[in-house]
Image (cartoon, rainbow, N blue to C red):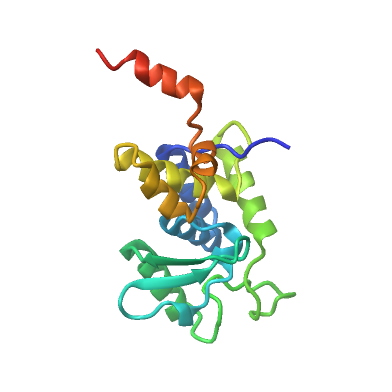
Length: 186
């Protein structure tokens, strides 16, 4: 199985803009939320309006690891949550599927989000294996780069306990360390 590509900020914007311009706002909102909160797609689509409370924090029990994650919710995510709450006041889930089969009672599926992101990537010409996890990797990479390589901060954003796993996410390997060391006197 191919490794999911870490997308750049420019590619993330392209994907989101394509989704929005093709009447796929739900999927654009999921992608922005995944990246902004550094969550997996399954945890993102299962977010409920009741989880978003005053105080700007969100507590998530990660489905894959069963670990709690506390997140300060950025303004961009609050805007998405409030816009969706206004548009769909009877929904329980922030990202409810309104297809005929789901009848507004279940969140959009992880598989559907992944299909839409893959389709967007193909349409905007992004090469490589792009999917939902690309947004989580993008988020972690942004945290790492904007914190001047603070691995502990990237680990916290991802809720990882093993630095090796985070280094794998960020593609930090012997080659990248060697390249960095080669430039320390320049």
